[in-house]
Length: 93
Ligand code: SF4
Image 1 (tube, protein in one colour):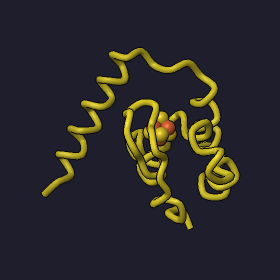
Image 2 (cartoon, protein in one colour):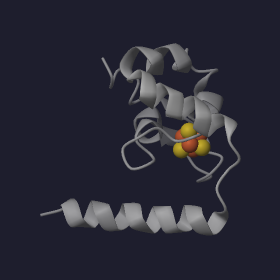
Image 3 (tube, helix red, strand yellow):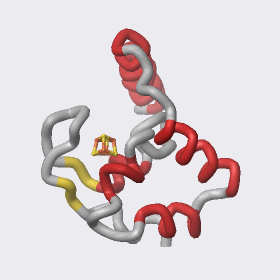
């Protein structure tokens, strides 16, 4: 089940600086996994095998590519966060 680990907790997110759940990490980038998900969660459970079992081949390839690529510039990350917040507000009734 895709949400099987959603309540698992990591004590400190390296990007946010506080506790996060796997459910957050799994959907952090506009509903898609955070680019660091493989690196952050491998000690908790076999996150690679878990995602491989639940994501399409293309989605899994994106996760692997994102993890291997350089992080986006801070201004791009900030822009993405603002856009994600706007999208969330748009979806609220
Ligand atoms: S996967 Fe991303 S959001 Fe989750 S703990 Fe790691 S850096 Fe933070």
